[in-house]
Length: 204
Image 1 (cartoon, rainbow, N blue to C red):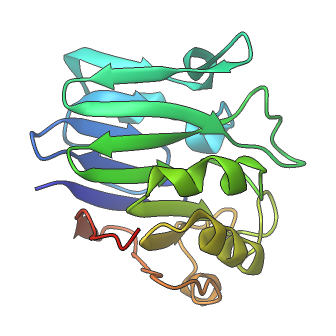
Image 2: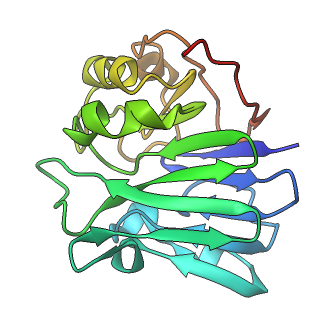
């Protein structure tokens, strides 16, 4: 079964049904003991790109914003049983030419790894049509949108489960801030907690 281990801040590890291991924005916490098949980096800020933490398989694919956004075009990738689509991410602190988010499809599960962002027009035009099962959204209110804006974004995106991350600069996690994030389907995941990823039945 597919799983997600939240490591803290903006870092997490995903394992597909077939055992493909994906690290997203390695930097914080623990859980870097399993070799990566894929490493995804949304942008080059130091708190999203500590690559030396991650052991790699011999055929590990490193996909950063530089590979994901080429010539102004958002790229698609396929690694083993995982499909990856780069999507826009940006705000006043993050240049859209240097940052991306990713939509991952693992079997029947579709997950949005937003990276560092605030509200984007693509959240209204692109993401709702992807029928997302999970969305992981930053809510720190300093470098990204705050919990209230992220709540509105989650409602627009329409993922069945929305998980707050990147809750406070310099901290693994701040539950008080996470609890201010309040869309339908909110799931608060603590650092070191692992959840099973499931495809959710849809009515549309």
